[in-house]
Length: 346
Image 1 (cartoon, rainbow, N blue to C red):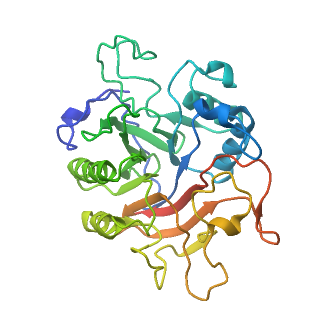
Image 2: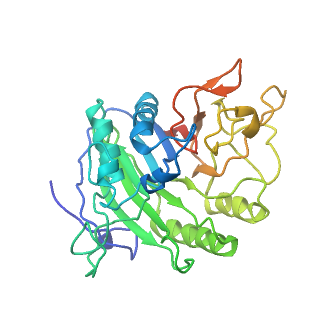
């Protein structure tokens, strides 16, 4: 194992990070990659739990089983709280993101985080009197990857220059991963854009595109996250085409205020269900017309974008829907439904 810094690579002038090169074997010429995005709801919101909205300890097992059940190779997580002050509300970790990683691996997974530090400080677990040290910490946005399949090449965190004063700082978490079997590399990112100010949200989205473009080089791009934006948001008329023009469009092929005549994904499951469920069991309250003869996509605010050249084999909104009653079954894991896609790297 050797170490490198991102400042020395073709990613450009970006945050330095220490990583493993993970030299690959050479067996395949292409690979299917299962990717996802999941806003898991911060543990700090536990006091608001009631009815079908459960505390983290009760939701954790369902989140773990959904990630493992989908066999995700890499997943972007939002609202994975980085503070250690909520340790008493956790099961097996000092922070929510460590609790999730530990739970996944205890259940048979092989997941690693691109950064285990809470803060970019000399004292990684506290922001009090912080003396800066880059640790690729990205707030409550985290990336989990299957280290048996993928090797970490570079990693980093980008704090958006546009922020809402007094609110949670918004970040882009990014990593370059390499498929161990083929040697193919790709850039994966996740983010949670500001929910309070539309002008700031649009600025952050523009910041994200510029940052990704400065890092991607010739690598395929997969950009995930909670964008707090649906295809019906007025500014989606600008931002969705901006993503496609930058080279990485929506994996469903959605357009502003319309359902596509044909979907980019070759097959879909529950694509008509919105990604935001609000802890409501009745799927009919947040889904599109699943019986339509034309392709239908829900009014989701979470997105998976991928390089336009990448085939999208499958897309799924992961929701335990009873098709007869149109109700969610079991413990509702979050107020967001996980989304996942299967992509083919060339």
